[in-house]
Image (tube, rainbow, N blue to C red; front, side, top):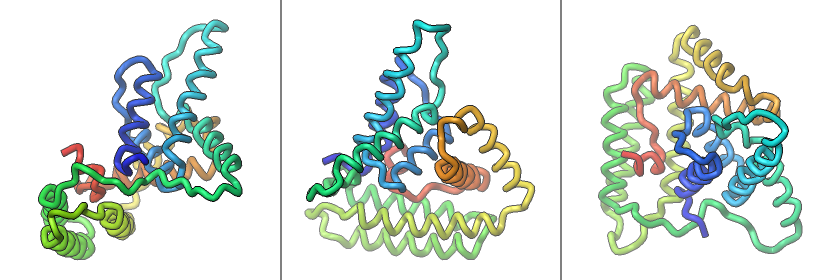
Length: 237
C-alpha cells in the first residue's frame, strides 16, 4: 500500500518520466495534486491518467509539429476520467481503495516535533491575522509536545496528525483571506486565471474552481511568508 506522502512525489516523478526531461512542478501543478488528493483520487488513477494523456499525445506527434507538455494540468482531464473509470469498475467490490496508506516511515518523533515548532515560530512572528496565527502556533506547540511524549518505539500516527494540520490550515486560510486587502486577493485570482488559461478546455468548471482556490491559498501563504503545516512539506526542508 502506498505511503500517504508518496502521493505527491510519485505523481511528480511519473510526469517528469513521461515528459522525458526534468521540469520542476509549478505552484499550479502542486495545487492540482492537492486537489486530486483532497478529492480522493487514487494514486493509481493519477498515474494511469498521466500515462493515458502522454500516450494520446505521443500517438498524435506524427501529424504535426512537436510541442512540449509544460504543465501537469495538461493531464487533468485524463486523470479524472481514469479515476471515474476505476470507480465504476470497483463498484460493488468489497475492497476499499485507500491511497493515503497507513504505513508511515521516516517520520521520526523528534523530526516531526521540530517541524511543528518551526511552523509555530513562523506563525508567531506573522503580521497578518495575528490572533489566529498566535492560536495556531500555540496548538502546533501542543501537538509537538504530544509527539515528543509518545512512545518512540511505536510508529507515529501521522495520518491522524495530518488531519489535525489540515483543519488548522483551513482555519488559517480563512483568516488570511478575511484579513488580506481586496487588491491582493484580486491580483492572486488574476494570476491564477492566467496560469489556468491554457488548460481550461481540459478541466471541468468544478475542477478549475478547486485548483484556483488551492493556488490562491498557496500564493497567500507565500505573500505573508508563512509555512505550510502539512507533514509533506517537512520532507522538503
